[in-house]
Amino acid sequence: MDSDNENRNEKNGDLSRNTLVAKCVMKSITHPLDYARFLVQIGHEPMSPYNYRTLLGEQRLILPNLITYAKYIYSVDGFKGMYIGLGPKILGICIEHFSFVLVSDYIKSDKNYNVDKDSDLEIWKKCAVNTSKEIICTATSIVMSHPLYVVSMRMMAQFVGYEHRYTVVLQSLSLINREEGVNGLFAGLIPRLLAGLGTVILVNVAKQAFSRYLFDPSPIALNIADFAASYLANAATYPFNVVTACIAINNCGLAAGMPPDMPVFGNWLECMRYMYRFDQLNRGSSTWFRRVPQAQPKLLKLL
Image 1 (cartoon, helix red, strand yellow):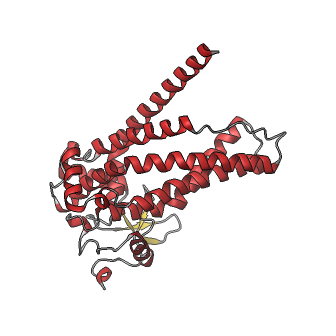
Image 2: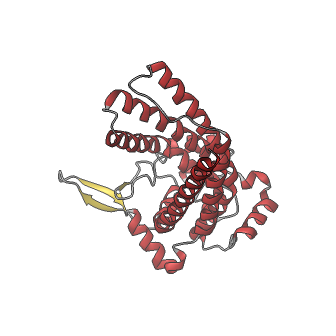
Image 3: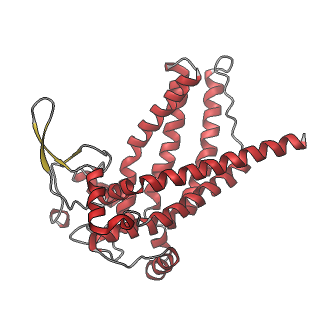
């Protein structure tokens, strides 16, 4: 019995490490696009929009896609410049992963649903319990890793004003703590928590509903349900990611977070109301087709 438990724990440990390595490699590969998306989220648009003819023959004004934006970053800062902010991001991913695993080791989730024998009430009770446990793990991992994500975002935001305030991880953490204290290290935490926890809730509920009522519960159908639930949840919580990016750099001394590029917000709710007012809550959500919002806030944001 003990040997079986040891073997099972060994396999789980190997799987966990492989998952972490795969995530770090994937984030490293896609970092230039994430970098471009982040700059769009904070409102930096160095390239002019252009006219695009749709399949129906309509003329529309669109912004360059994120791949073109990444090429622009390369033309300014070179290949190395495309990976600014990757170091603290990878460290944040590692802390997020290990803190999630450590908490989940103490909070066991029952993933064994018997859709044929269990009643609707029993299945939804199990879903609620497992979702609550996952919320605890996710919240812990987000809080533990957030200061490193703040450092990563501020390193990338320096592209706007060509600054060099945040250079390495320890120096950046020390600078933020000295100038802004704990509030600076956890700037944008609440909207990031809402995005992360909202995604967990929506994914679990939608996946359970899809697999229970819409599809035949086969492995392929469950994979389709998982993908659809994740896509819908990420789309629903994306505005919180935009608010997180803006609040993380707001009023920190960088040009990107100060007027006229960005107003000084009192809190994240004020930022969200402002972004909603100017139809900016979904900027950066599309990789390929980026429409020009009807309301373009620049000096208007100060009124």
